[in-house]
Image 1 (cartoon, rainbow, N blue to C red):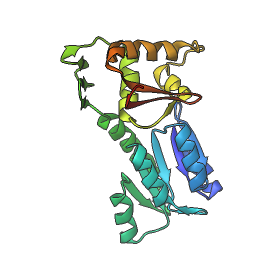
Image 2 (image 1 turned 180 degrees about the vertical axis):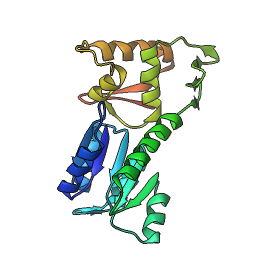
Image 3 (image 1 turned 180 degrees about the horizontal axis):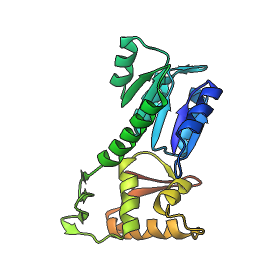
Image 4 (image 1 turned 120 degrees about the vertical axis):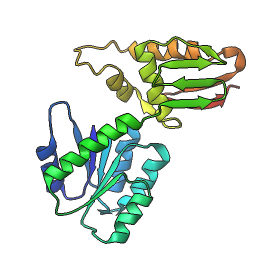
Length: 226
């Protein structure tokens, strides 16, 4: 899913019509507040961001995004001063385009950012007793290899890449079972989380890593149990 943050509704809708392809979804938001609220609910694959918004600067939204995620961000704005571009890139934007723009170039840059985002990810994660190598698919706890199913691997990677951030049940379900199936048992995610916990956590240690945020979803965050 691609999130477009643009207060010109006609322009936002035009971008969607021009770029939409099978399997590609877009959502449009016209303010910093609306965009941030949506970002907190569902993690997009890429963000197309205007700088001049009615309730603040797109740079403010970018700062909040970078506190939580490394999702690719393309700034698309009428601000064509060199300093504006430097500011956006310094704050963590992955690309910068000015209006007016070529739809063909925009499409090419979006595809490049999506490919880069998938390639970048989190190939190797090490923390305490854990070492997760998502390239070689070797996962160890206290030096011992842990066997994970494909969905457990996918779930773990999503949690690690967004550690410290709540991922909603809806988002996780969509990402784990995105094969176009007509039906996914509502307990499938709970079962996958339970199995992953049983393989990575030891209740005797009194430490939990996969946190349940009731009414919302899950997140990876080390927390001492009391």
